[in-house]
Length: 265
Image 1 (cartoon, rainbow, N blue to C red):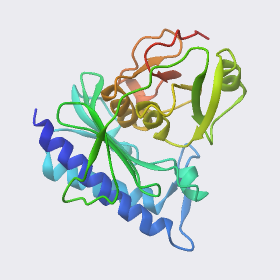
Image 2 (cartoon, rainbow, N blue to C red):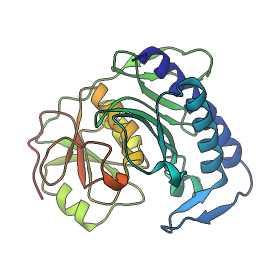
Image 3 (cartoon, rainbow, N blue to C red):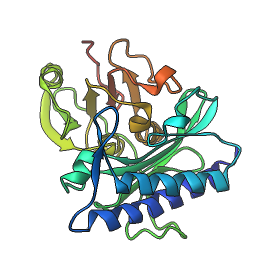
Image 4 (cartoon, one colour):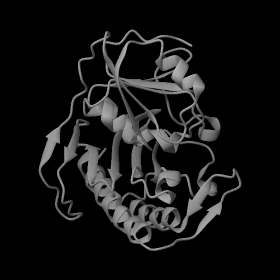
């Protein structure tokens, strides 16, 4: 597998998609529609999806693509495939909060082994390198030439003073009840797949998600967290969260730095 080539491709496409998204984001107004599942979609989602899909097909035609915005890709999963969410955090985008991301992951036998998460409005770029190790690249970001990178590693949690991150748009009572079972010193709120990245960067210790997500919502973030020494497990069994499931729907899950005695629901 040409990991160096794949990483270069997904990094470049994420940045190009991010630029296209910002062009829409910075307008006075943009179109918002509802999909069949009643979730919102904007022209930025569709523009980024077309750009990423075309780029992946041109650079790596041998690797199938599953992308949120193209229902005809949601069939049977493959042993190796790209998993794309061209704009994760559409609600944050619509509300102009800035916590939205571009997500591209490579899935190999159920595991996201390489991935990129780019938050264009925040100018934060996280990705796994050719060896699968996670870095954050400093801004400004040039699609044609990688800049200075900092290797990332999860924190060493203090079980008596955990830092927890949870969703801005999807936090509910069940999530709060679960978090309250731990000894928490600080709480951070973030949108989209940035929550995985905060754990990967050592800025948070624990991210529980007790709500519906799809595999494209989490794959790139999970790759980034795994490459920084973290883990993502099912909420019910604490077994690793895997990909290529029927329907591409996730169970509830917990993303965490090692060293926390996870509680079951």
